[in-house]
Length: 176
Image (cartoon, rainbow, N blue to C red; front, side, top):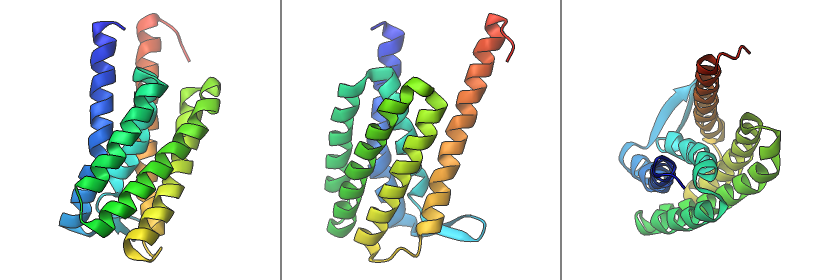
């Protein structure tokens, strides 16, 4: 692995691992926040959505084994750094959603990064939202907002990837 690739892999993995403790902190500090279209969600929703995106990008940069280790690390941090109910809900939801994201992403990756990212994030977001909301709050009332907030992060990631791809094509002199 080149030094640049190692730096990218390390940075992506570190960012991924801290997203869930950051999400838990946001929920604890800021409660529910508007996410658009009249919906609200626990404030950590964007970090949870970012985790799904970063997991896929970390897989590209660091490989499967590193991502599985990062899922374990993120789950442990999630459990250790929040109050018991939030920690348990977060750890279970995080581990389940990230492993589901991984399972969907891997076979779809051959069809393209955008396809794999969109499908795996949809699966992971659904699982994470259902499990977290039910276990943390005993209610699914925030489900539409949770899904919307995570969809914003996936859409943002796809837009960034499209921009990177377009820039690479432009530098290479290739037209769409």
